[in-house]
Amino acid sequence: MTVETTSQDISIEALRNGDRAEFARLVDAYSAPIYRLGLRMLGNEQDAEDVLQNTFLIALTHISNFEGRSSVLTWLYRIAVNEALMIMRRKRPEVNIDDTDSSDESDKIFPAQFVDWRALPENELLSAEGRQALEDAIQNLPENLRMVFLLRDIQDLSIKDAADALNLTEANVKVRLLRARLILREQLSFYYGERMKKEKTND
Image (cartoon, rainbow, N blue to C red; front, side, top):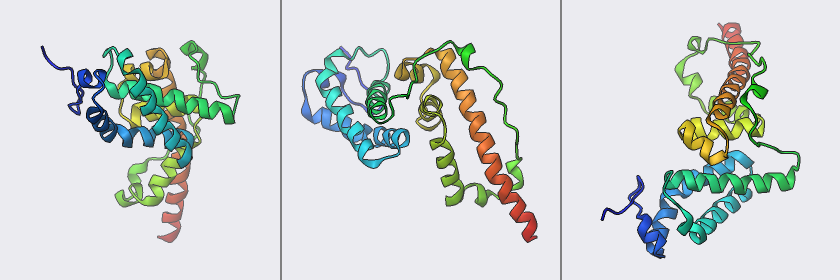
């Protein structure tokens, strides 16, 4: 019989049998992405730590329920997202990322300003200030768009896995991802547009 494993060679069978050493390997393998997701979702280190701890505590107590239809990491992301949402809703009860028909979110949101970033030097795009501008823009996204963007474009989940983690339809994930990318492009176009004006002024 073959042993079910993840990409990190974590044995699901061993986890289901209560192997604590294997669970420690799971924590070591996936703590970093779970923490980063919590931090980007909530913007608070203590909250991110709570998400991390609660995610693995829930995983430990419910590993027998894991059916293997998705990867372990996607399953952990789903737990982490739910934990983050509970923290978010305690602080902001109006937050709602529930699934809706994709047509509800297909209003025209095309950015008013696009800047050709190719005109900027590469070191400008990759600078610490540029990366911070991207982080700030991500944090300014509405929660329902930010979570989709984080899972798909930052954590590199597939559309299907992101939909599973967020309990959304794939169509809804695609619409929200498009909206998030367009909003980010507009915000960053404004930022880099100002940078390009400064470059021309200094020429």
